[in-house]
Length: 284
Image (cartoon, rainbow, N blue to C red; front, side):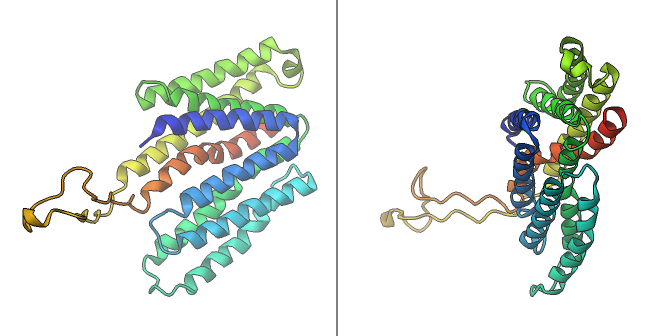
């Protein structure tokens, strides 16, 4: 699993979202829309479950709908997120009823759809936090925690140690940021900044671990046997084609491609709710 590039992508995306949050809620909403699209169309749609693409479409509408609602009203509460979960549950059930494949794996497919809808709306909590009083500070600190863990994940060390280092870097970075910048220290106490960044980094580390566990448990489907194309007729029926003799590579098993988008998007999904709760308690 190409974890290094995905971890670096998480760190880079966290930095972009932090800059977007400092610039305004509109740019942050655009960045969070990208996270929701990566999670739904990249991860959910590639899952090995019935009607996975329909589930991804419903989750995408739920996430973008809650994001647009929160942005248009400039609301700092979570009403749009809660209001859209009910209709998406009904839509998920309707999709299962309309399936024409015998509804194989009905429980798994419905669970995937409902879980995807819930997770797709969670990043909206960062936008709601941004709309609160001095909300740009806890959002930036939470993204600092996610970015630190993503950066530490790319280091050449064991994953467990890297995640621990990332959480420690998040705490130290938040403390140093408050102590060295007057404009942050006036809005956020040092202890509050460390708490927000540390817990956001911790949830990002948990998300990385969850994706790794899914990847370890994933069992690829048997790949089709490569067909020899253009072999030498004089070599007889038992001859095999040499390297590069036209054998087509086996396609990537369905489901394996889901882990890379999940690894990029899930840390933000997991860190958003804890950042909202702690940010509203300690800062806003």
